[in-house]
Image 1: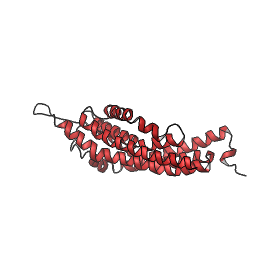
Image 2: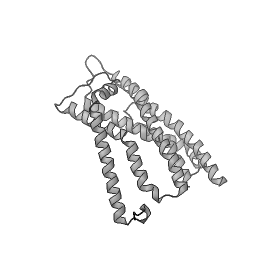
Image 3: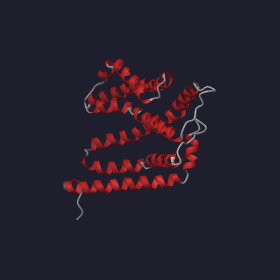
Length: 237
């Protein structure tokens, strides 16, 4: 008779984890290979904010395509990754914990997409226009494809992650680490931290930093509202 996951030994759990990691890697490889077939279209879309790129090494253009294919492949295989992670941990969760994950996972994915979209359609074009405005007849911008892909990947990933801020506040409230009153009292310190994070992540210009800090401050306020709703629900229970 087949064992349930709750009856697995430690070694069997490790074997199960290894199998799921293999499935995740295979999903990423397959997705990346499929993406590579249309990588030129994706690249043309992504370089719209700058218009034209150059490369300074014979391998740069090829390596940039590989890097981009892996990045997009990871993004496309994310549902498979989430499913495998969920399948591994769900058997050890209580019903109320599963209910929280059912809410948390799609909200997390939505906020990540929102952050990526905001970065690509708002922040990156403004940042590039501002930074390139310092060019002159003697200083001509020649952005390499490697540097641009690196810059783009960093910005998209950073915005996707920091847009999870409301869920961080919700999670801290849910597990009893903090309360809405605590978040409200520490608002000024949170704003300072947001400004510091924005300065570290974004290019070194005040315009881009403010473009990132503004939405994060709004998301912090939304997080406080969600935290209050969660805290009230816990007290009612």
